[in-house]
Each structure stands twice: as structure tokens, then as C-alpha cells.
Length: 212
Length: 280
Image (cartoon, rainbow over all chains, first blue to last red; front, side, top):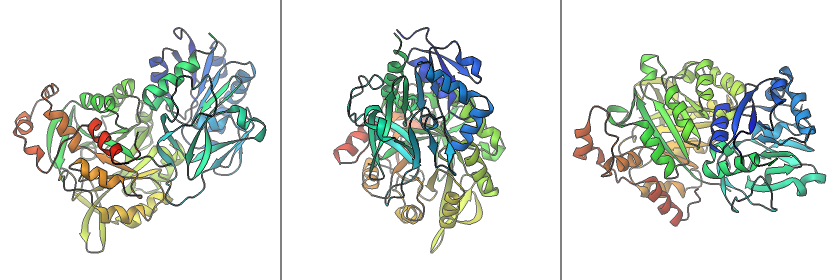
């Protein structure tokens, strides 16, 4: 049962908060906008969204002292879901607009799609996911399900966790990249579940079901 | 892998979806929410709301629509029309818009593109180009729904838009818009070969064959469509949304169907998939 589960949607000024809150409600959760560390205290789950550039996002999180708060939340073993830029922020670093440190929750780097003939960057399209293993986050999602992607950078997981944490891959610019991951209590999707109709709601329901 | 996108465009004036030919002579078709919900249910890839009077009267009244749409419709929503500054963008994004379209404001101050992209993310900022074939070797950039010439050349402007950090361009052939005579490939090929950000093409789709042809082309990723979907919905026997005052006689006369072969989003996608187009 997902009702009455308080889900923090972290608002640091960069993200489609309203869309995510709508989608969480639609999926049976009770979304709470959180923009300070204390807001993460009494919630069972947290979503870290993100739209925009990595350096600015990390800077905003730091200003609001949310960087430490998110790291602590994850360290406590509570379910944390990063979406799009939010997924990238969980990583060690990103090469977007320079070299910037991330939250370091995942052993991973964020890199730009390589310039590839015939491919526009950013990737703005529905794309399919291939699921190499079973996972909680993608339970009941069919193989090759379409989700909506909107990004120029992708996550490259460290060798030590790549095969274990990758729960879906997608193809763009002639390369395979991680489109969703699950590593202990840390989850993330490069695509936007809140913009991916019913399949997206299924993902959120699966996330909300954790801790039942 | 590249997946093609179909984007349904709703031109909104006050509380109604409108449609025009050459962006003049607006006709009222019905309630935006009915249209949006219908397209969403049928599998549209994205929705685009354009407030067609905002630029003229210096207003932007889309936020309520956006909020209501975002509450029930879970595909990307792009919004435009009269967006001039940061606060306009922030307000729309806060209401649930995923991307915003700017045109006039960018022409008047190109640096606005980079400022907005820096603040809100490149992928959030779409710049619209309204193109008219006004010279033998190219196209001119127009604003205010195709009324005012900007002095800019489409090709040069498209390249500048990309260099300033916009995430996407929506390219409208004003000459073809509302005519149902097919896309302007000369214009499209010129722009897509010059930029590497996604280009949404718009203006002239009159039947599914136009879409099939466009989507089988390597350089076309996304097509924005209004007339053929709108007229299909309106012509349905059980269409009850014509409770908006005005122009029911226009709709019933069938005059809006000149050169148009209306088709539903659902049927359209079936045809495209059968033709081998990779689409959701």
C-alpha cells in the first residue's frame, strides 16, 4: 500500500517539481516539497529531481545544505530516487561545463554523449529500455518499454558496480548507456518517469512500495 | 536508436483552441483541455500550447491551462507565446511545463537565450523560427505570428540559436502552415544540416502520407501537427466540446477541411508503425 507514505520531493530550485508531485500523487504517494535538511527527517522516501546544468545544481544543493542531507539520507538506508539530472548528481563527478564534484553516493562519472553523425544532442525523444536483470524499480515494466529522455550527459558507472547496479540500458549516439540503476537503497532513472505516462507511474509505484 | 516524435500543437486564444491559415484568420475549435486529454489518451508524444495573442497584447495567460494539464497529462508539455523574461519562464515551469518556447523576445535580445539556458537548462529552452520564403536563395525570419520581418536570415539565426545554448528549435514554414500542402523540405533540409540540436518541423501537414514521408527521412526527428488532428476530433459525431462560443458553422461547413485529410493520433501512429517508422 502506498497511501500515507510521505515522499520528499527535493526542491532546490531546479527541477520540474510540480510534475513530479503530480505523478507521485497519481501513483498513490503523498508528496512533500522539501527545501531544507530538516524536511528529510520524517519522510520514508526521497526523490531528487533535476533539470538544468550539473555545476549549478550542486552549487544550489550546497547553499541549501541539502548536499549533506541527501548523502546522510542515503547512508541511513532510506530509499532515494534520482531522476534525470538528479541521477547524475548522485555520482562522483561530471564533465558538464568543467569538472565538478557530485554527491559521490555512486561510484560513477557523468559524461557528454559523443558527437555522432545523425544524432542530435540533447537526446530529446522517447527511447526504449533493455532490462538485463530483474529489479524492484522496473518490476512489471515490459522489455523495450518506451520512456521519455531529455539529456545531453549520461552516467558511466565504475567497473566495480556497473553490472550489479545497471537495471536498464538504452542506446543513443551508437552507444549503450545506463538508463536506470538500483544499488542498495539508491535508485535512479535517466529518463523522466513523471513524463512517461503509465509506465512512468508504474516505476513510481514500485519505488513507493519499498519499505512495505 | 532514434525514435520519431509527433507533437500536437494547440494554439490557444483566451479559453479556446484556435486554428488559422497562414497564422491569420483564427477559427475557434473548442476547449484546450478536451483536445489535450484526447491526444494524450491516443498516445501523442508531446503537447505544445502556444498562446497566440500574448505577443501582440503583451500578456501571458497560460499558467492556469498548464497547471490543469500537468495535473492529468503525463507526457512532456511545451508552452510558448509572449514569453519575455525569467519570471515568465519560471512561472510556467513551476506550473508543470517541461519546456518553453521563445521567439520575439529572443530576436530582440539574443543573449536572453543563453541567460535562460544557463538558468533553467538548455533542454528547457526551445526557440521558434517562423520562416517565410522571401528571397530566392533563402528564408527570412518573422515574428508576431509571421507579420513582422526581423531582418534575420533563417539559416544564420538557426546557427546562432544553437551557439547561444538553446536545446531545440521549432521551425515553422509560415507559407505552408494551415494549408495542408505538405512540409517545406527545402527549408527543413537547410536548417537540419546546419545545426546539431533537435529541430521540430512544423507547417503544412495535411494528411498522414505527409507524416510518413517526413518521418522516413533521416534528418527529421520530430514533427509538430495541428490541423489534421484537430479537425479529426472536431468531426467526430460525439464531439461535445464545441460549447465554446463562435464558429460552429465554420466547423460544420467542413470548410476547414480543405486540403486536409483528418486522422486521429491513434490511426496515424498505426500507419506510421506499419510503414516501419520507429515511434512510440
